Length: 355
Ligand code: NAD
Ligand code: DAU
Image (tube, rainbow, N blue to C red; front, side, top):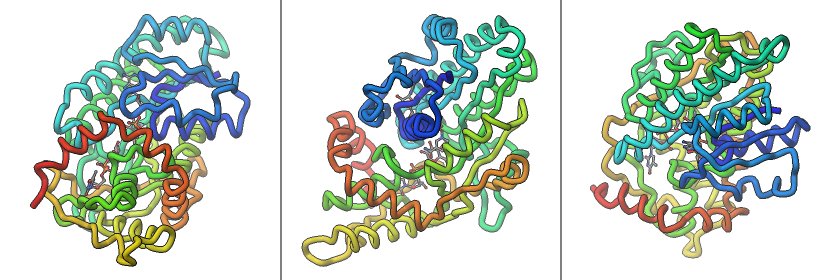
C-alpha cells in the first residue's frame, strides 16, 4: 500500500480517486482536514475498503510512526501543505508550521521507518515530495522556462516555505540516504479546486453575479496544467524516477490571467448565459495587486518527457471546458465549501482591494 498526506485537498483527492480507479493497491490518506481539506471530495470511496482515511497532522510524529509501523507502506507521497499565496501574505505562520516544521517531522518519522526496513522493502521504498514552480521565483518576458537547475528565488511566504521543505527533502537524501523524489509543478486546475484560487473563484463569482477581481493589470502569466495530468506525472515519477532527482511538471500552457478570465466568461456565456443576455465579462473588476506578485511562471517539462516519457494528455482548451462543466454540474459541492470561514476569507482578502 501507499500513504498519501493531504489527500482530501484539491490535488491529493484527485490523486486518490485516480489511483483507485486504476489500481487495487490500498491507500492510507492522512489529512488534517484544514479549511482546504474536504471529505466530500472522496465521498465515492466511503464504502471502499481500499481507502483508509485518517484525520491527523503531518507534524504528529507519534501518529506517523504508528501508521507507518501498522501499514508498512511501500511509498509516501506528500501533498499536505498550506497552499494559497494570498493567505500566506495575510498569515504566514501556518505555512511555516505545516510546510517547514511539518515536513521536517514527517521526514524524521519516515527516516526511522525506512532505516528499520530490510532487504527488498528497504530498496523499494520511496518518499515523493510534491512541490511547486513558485520556488524558482519570477521570470521576465521571453526568459527561458524554469528547468530543474534554475536557482531558488522564492518571493512569497508560501513559496519560501515550500522552498525550505524542498531543501529539507534534498538534505535527507544527501545526508541520510533517504530515497526521495521531488516534483515541482506549475498551476493546476480542474475538479475540486477550492474557490479561493483564480479559476474556480472566477467561475463561482460569475455564476453568483459577483465581481471578478483581477489583480493589477491582469497580465501576469501562469503555466496551467489539468490536475489529472499532474496526477499521472506523479504516478510516473513514483514508478520510474531516479532517486534524489527533481522533476519539473508543466503543461506548456502559458496564459495571462486576463485571458484565463475571458476564456472562463466565454464558456459560461455559452453554457449558462446570464439572464440579461450580457457577457459575464461585464463583471470583471480590476483590483489592487497582490503584494510581491510574481509576474511570470513557465515550466520546462522536457526532463520528465525525455527521461520518463511523460506528457500531458489535456490541452488547455480541453481541460478548461471539462473544468467549467464540472463546476456547473457540482454546484452543491461549491455551496458546501462556502462555509462561514470561506466568507470571512473572501471579506478579508478583497475588502481593501477596490481601486
Ligand atoms: P490544498 O490546499 O487544496 O490541499 C492541501 C491539503 O493538505 C488539504 O486537504 C489540507 O487539509 C491538508 N493539510 C494541510 N495541512 C496539513 C497538515 N499539517 N497535516 C496533514 N494535512 C494537512 O492544496 P493543493 O492545491 O491540493 O496542493 C497540494 C500540494 O501540491 C501542495 O504541497 C502544493 O504546494 C502543491 N502544488 C500545488 C499546485 C496547485 O496549483 N494547486 C501546483 C504545484 C504544487
Ligand atoms: O504555480 C503553482 C502554484 O499555483 C501553487 O504552488 C499554489 O499552491 C497555487 O495556489 C498556485 O499559485 P498562484 O498564486 O499562481 O494561484 P492563484 O490561483 O492564487 O492565482 C493565479 C493568478 O491569478 C495569480 O497571478 C494571481 C491572480 N489572481 C488570483 C486571485 C485569487 C487574481 O488576479 N485574482 C484573484 O482573485
